[in-house]
Length: 302
Image 1 (cartoon, rainbow, N blue to C red):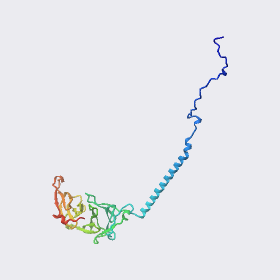
Image 2 (cartoon, rainbow, N blue to C red):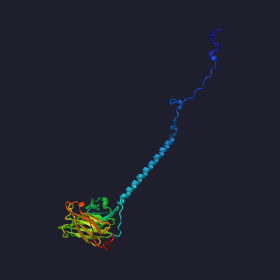
Image 3 (cartoon, rainbow, N blue to C red):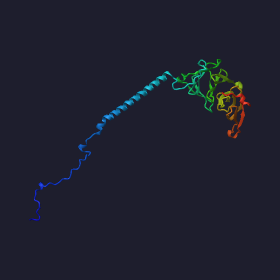
Image 4 (spheres, rainbow, N blue to C red):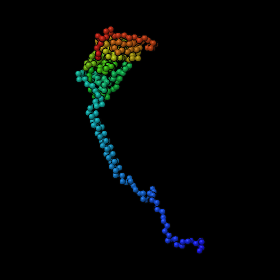
């Protein structure tokens, strides 16, 4: 026997050689067996959600535009929609004509109307009332007539609101009308309080060199006024004199030119510094005085 000869002479095709198990089929991205579209199953649900959202958005837009149309309609029929006005049923006022000064309290602030101009009260530290031309909306406000220009004034020169200030409590106001005559000018000071208009004082050139009054400071309780008195209506850059005015009785006191002034917590007491040209207020002594010696008996709350 040839040692190189195979021991088994069975043909190779007759042998049964066990094969290892086939590996599981891997679903590769490129495999046809992986062609599954999960989005296709969820598509109806997504469309339903989108449809619901679109319907909700459309409903919200419809409601918004409906409200805007309603508000626009209310504004056209009622010009007071955007403002709050205080009523004064116990003060009917006078008929409003061409030369009538009228007032309204809009959004908590007093306003005057004269000759198509609306005036707002002076800010603290200011001597000039704010003013602006009245718009159609402003003219439609529920104005109440206060006073007419004096009958002896020429129609072409009737004057202006020269000064206007509300009290600290904001329940009253004082204003000064500069009525212009053919040969002179007069300053009438009025006060509206407790549904009543009263004329406090008339200033003319007969009062002296300083006769043009500007409202400067209310006392904290509203009983006193500090008036800045000028030589003319256009002399506001010059140093004025200070005139103290007691509203309930009309008593006055002129304390001359001052560089500083303030009312104390007690209406009757005030502090001031004299004015000296070329000397700053810091170098001047502070003076304190009383208008009346027995303030408790004379003063009444306003």
